[in-house]
Image (cartoon, rainbow, N blue to C red; front, top):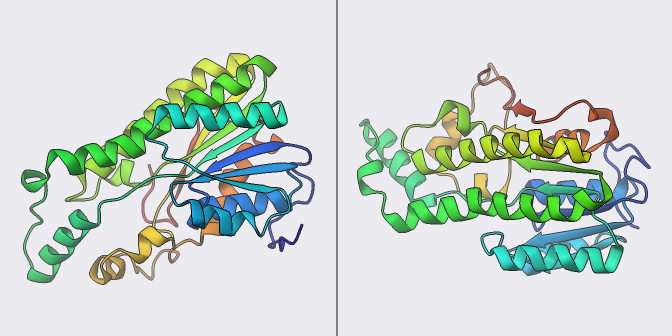
Amino acid sequence: MNVEMNRDTQPGRFAGRVAMVTGAGSGMGAAVARQLAAEGARAVILADLNGEGAEAVAEELGAGRAVQLDVAAAAAVDAVADDVLREHGRLDVLVHAAGVDDPEAKQRIANALVEGRPPEVTDRLDDAAWQRVMRVNLDGTFHVLRAAVRAMRPVGAGAIVVVGSSSAFDTPVGYPHYAASKAGVHALSQAVAKEVIASGIRVNVVAPGPTETGMAARTPEVLRTGFADPRVRPYATPEEIADIALFLASDAAANLVGAVLLANGGRFTV
C-alpha cells in the first residue's frame, strides 16, 4: 500500500474493516478514501459518477477498488452495495460525500454582488435545476443510507457518515435549493440515526463550510473573496474534513449518534 500518512493518521484505526466512500473521485471523498486505506481498511470501495477520477484514486490505494456510480439512481446504489457484500461479506464503514452544487445560481449571485444589487435567483430557478440538486443531494443520500442500513443491520454493527453543509444553517442568499437539500440531508440522517442505533449502526453528519474542492474551484472569484475573512480560518482542506468524518466513523465516537458537527472554521455557530 503506497498511501502517505498525514499528521492525523492513526495506523490501524480501521484495521480489517470494509469501507465504501461515495464521491471518492476527488475532494473530501478522495481524502477519506486515502485515509481509510492508510489506517488499515482491508477494502475501500471508491464510488463516483466520475469513474475515471475514482479509478485514479483507487490506483494509489493497495486496498482500493473503483466503481462508477450515480447516487441518484437507486437501483445502481443497491447493486454496488450488493456487490460489496458478495465480495467481502460485510460493510463496516460508509462515508457519503457525493453531492452537487449549482454553478449557474452561483454566477447569478456573483453578478449581483459585482453590480451592487440583490440576487434574483428564486424566480428564475427552473424545475430542472431544483430537481437536479434535490435528486443528487437528498434522494441520493436516502438511496445510500438505505443501502448501507440493509447491509449493516443483519450483522448489528456499522458506522455511516454523511457530508452535509453549513449552508443548511446559514442558508445563503440566492441558493435556496442547495440549502434546502442539505437541510433535508441533515434531518434525514438524524431520523435514520435514531432508528438504527438499536441495530448497532451509528449515523452522523459533518457539515463543512468553505472547503478547497473542485466544487469550490468552480465558485466565482467574487464569492470566494467574500469567504476570505481574516477573523476566521481560511478554506478547509479536504484532509481536514476527512479527519472529522473518520473520527465520526471511528470507535472513539461511539457515543455520537445523530450528531451534526459544524466544521466551518468559526464563520458562525449554531
